[in-house]
Image (cartoon, rainbow, N blue to C red; front, side, top):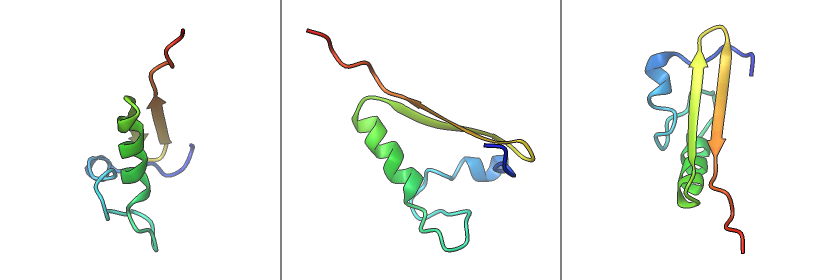
Length: 66
């Protein structure tokens, strides 16, 4: 996105359970998302810069072919 971005000290905590940077957030969305992706053998990472926005990179393995 092209939003405000996430401060480096906060970026290290965004996947921790019950940590939210939004008012009213419960801090479970990214935690659960990453757990699901990892159970499927993939990765979910965030890259962010203050004033520039955030990029989420989701990678999943290809399905086996028969």
